Length: 185
Image: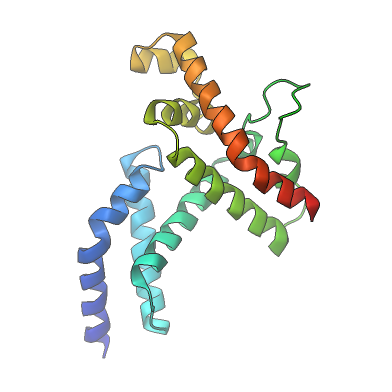
């Protein structure tokens, strides 16, 4: 019986390994982070396969990978919740996720909202052009200053600021509905 489960795990790794690693790489900063997350996914798969069967293996793997990415970003620091989607202080379009995400205490509801936020943020980031997404991630999630990004890319700082602004505008629009649903409850 254990050999059958091992064969299932090996088959799953062969079938989903490349695609899953690519999925993770697009959402994390380094290849090392992607490989660590993938290893965590395989470890969780081995633990679950021994306990219960998985009906939709592919969907389960991608959900676990998404959760691991969210966990990694959450562990980085509390500063991640300070994502600047608000722009100017008097901006009526501002979305104040910080107030919601940094509530004291951890309840199932706050954990659910945090996970939902990160999931929706990554989905929204996938919808924008790569150049805008990368500037936003470097600046907001990795806390890299614009001048350092300009040195890395060879782009002018004003170009990078403009790209980030387009990203923020898209994220505001995309996450506004989520924000409104959260504050209504």
